[in-house]
Length: 139
Image: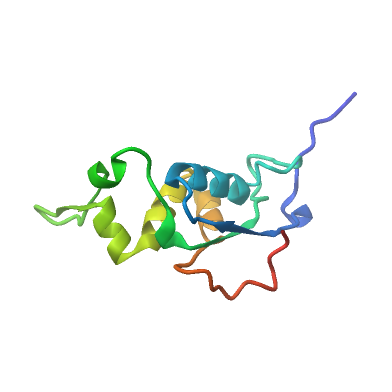
């Protein structure tokens, strides 16, 4: 009888992946990063185990959106104070903090659980192409 393989947290081997965001579409970049962070690209993927890898994203300021989404896309959040609904356009947020745009896209694709909190800590996003993880990148 065959048994289903279940990965244990002690058996996880993490790699570091480098993604260059230059001229990439935001959603496709986020999907690629979320897949690596969750570990779904590995044959040992187990949903209840955090078996994903680290992801370093460079050139965050060069990410793109298709069609006219760059003018129309709006990020909304609430400060939890009365009348505290805030909003920012994609272009405005790209000027202030391009790392946050990519982080929010990836964050939306990760689980909203304790497991997801651990996964979020393995995202590294940088403006420009300089980063301190050159010695760890495998590919």
